[in-house]
Structure formats: C-alpha cells, structure tokens
Image (cartoon, rainbow, N blue to C red; front, side, top):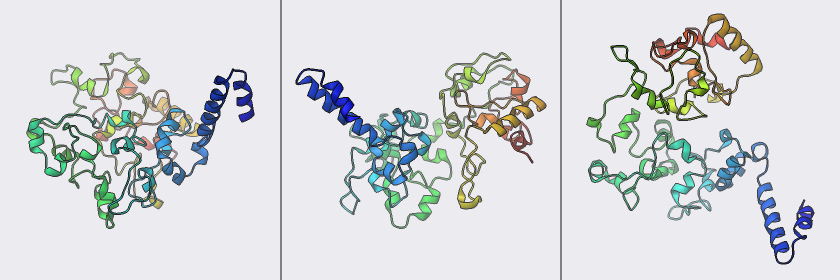
Length: 338
C-alpha cells in the first residue's frame, strides 16, 4: 500500500511529490491504527485512545453502542489523563469539557441540558458555593458545574455509585427535579405532563406536541412514523428518558437477571421476532411502530405516548391513556411465544 502511494505521489514534481507522499502515507498509517475498531480493539485499547473516538464514530469505524464507559473503574483513568493520576498530580489530556466530548457526543447531551449557558445574578444567588465555583470565568455552565467527577475516585465510593451513578454535584437526589432546583427556582415551575395533549373542550394543545415534535404533525389516519418530525431522528428513546427513569424496565437494567445484564429490547428485531410481530399486529389490529430508518424497537413500539383522541388511526391509537400506556395488555406476546 505504501509503495502504491509513493508511486502515485512521485508523478508530481519536487517538492510537491515528496510532500504529498508523506501526507498520504502518514494519513493512511493513522487511519489503519484503529481500523476495524468495532471488531478488534478491546475495551482497554478504546479507553487508551479515547481522544480518537469522535473520529472513529464519524468514519463509522466504531458503533456508538461500543463507546467505552470509563467511569467508576480503576483501570480506565487513561481515558482522560495522560498518565495514571496520583494525589496532587492528575494531568488531563485536554481541557475537561473537551475530554468529556471524547465519549459524550454534544448532540446527545443538548436534549438533557446544554452547557455554556450564562447563570444570571439571581440564579447565582441560589447556588451553593460548590456550584458557583464550578462556573466558568464568565459565569457559564460547563460539565463540571453539574457533575462532580472526583466522587468516583474516592476509595469508598460503592454506595455513592449505587445512589448517584452520574455523580451529580450535591447528590444523592431522590427525584431528578430535586437536582434541577439547585439552580432553578422551584416556585417558578410546576410539573409538566407532555401526555396531557387535549383540553377539556377537546381541543388539541399544539404546544404540548412541540415538546417532542419539531412541528405539529398532521392528524390524518395514514401518517407514517417517519413523517412525525421528532427532535431526534435516531435513538428516539432519548426523548422519553428526559422524564422517565427506566430502572427497572425490560428495556433497561434489571438487576435480578444473571450477572445483572438484562436482555436489550432496544435493538433491531430478528427475522423470527419481526415475523411474529407482523403476524400479531395484523391479528390484533394493533400498531407497534419500529424506529424509522433503523428498524429498532424503541419506547413507542410498546407505549403510546399520545392522549386518547390525538391519533385517528384506530390501530395506532391503541394504548392511549391505558395503564403504562401499553399498546396491549399482554404486550410481550406480540413478539415472544408464551
């Protein structure tokens, strides 16, 4: 391969030929250093090359599901640090916020809470000293404002890992909104129910639609799931997870499984499962949509997020306002044999 590159570049006159050959060879060597990462590189290799993960994802060399999680592990310090940290000396590869973006893609986190927002004087007055000193110099939020990353480095952190896995600053919090009120005025907010979509007079509340949708979908019976213009085109479950904590849950982490690893339902169903799903949905006249573009099972496959009366298609309307919003009472048998 190197000889082919050299032969191609040598057709150009000096110094262009030499310069081009060096650039092409170095580029080829750098890319092959982690080629086929999704099938070859181990967890430790991915951790030690964490700074390359954004490129691997962009070049489709690494599936997002294989991004390593270095948190709460004693053997993953090199994901962020240039060498094994010791007390008083823990040099980072780059600035902390940029380090986080090795693994946490910016477009994913913006749905939860964006960074670089300015905390005004009133908000800063509500903050504890611990939060205030973690604002950037211009009083803007960053990753460390909300996450106390040093918690996971403590020797006796097992209990904290169980109660505050995302190491939220000031945690443990019994509710998610309890953390929000470390910055935001609790009195200015009341609980929002995005599923309350129709007024008592039967009028659709368009503002509720825009919590999940980019624009209000048309209410006709043949609307395909792909045309609903959600804020996320893929990984649609992330919209639901902003409000719904999914433990325990068939799609999440249920610790009573062997090894604490439950079956992952948020995947593309096998041909056998897909055939049964198609058969049962036809038989029971029920709509169980898969994620457009990927064909994955996602939250709305089993749960209907809409209020009764919003969806006009009879099969897709099933489950609205039912217990847990399940599209059928025996939801599992639509995919699985008894």
